[in-house]
Amino acid sequence: MSFTIRRAKKEDMPQVLALINQLAHFENEPDAVEVTLKDLENDGFNESPAFFCFVAEINSKIEGIALGYNRYSTWKGKAIHLEDLIVNETMRGTGLGTALLDEVVKYGYQLGVKRINWEVLDWNEPAINFYKQKGATIKEEWRVVHMDEQSIKNYISNI
Image (cartoon, rainbow, N blue to C red):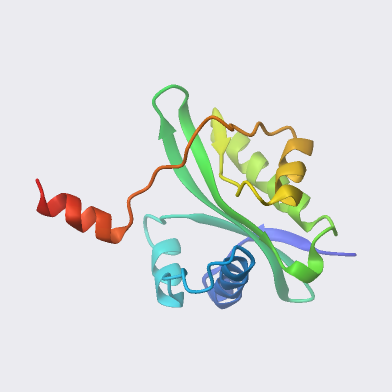
């Protein structure tokens, strides 16, 4: 199978959003996606992009994405966060996920990052095994902490 891994373009965002929605369904959160096409286009393609994105393309169709952003670690320095690595369900096991992860790691290496991190759901055994096979360490003892939009508003109203 022949495919191309390349940097995403603004005009790719409809297909990127479709894969994001596919992932939400896979993760049993079909109504959780709030990001819009306009958000992706504005946030990723301006003077100071909020994210980077690589796409896996076959016959002009985007079959996978790797979307992330720059971070800074107080312990390590420059880092990147891989927000999502998504491969179309029908294309899993074809090498697209490996090629996308390869591109993210090369990108991080070129930036001189000291760490690349991401999360994986504890029930997603295929993804966990894939990441372990690639040499990633699963930090079982760490918990993901976040505040959603409502939590942020509540917090602000109390300070």
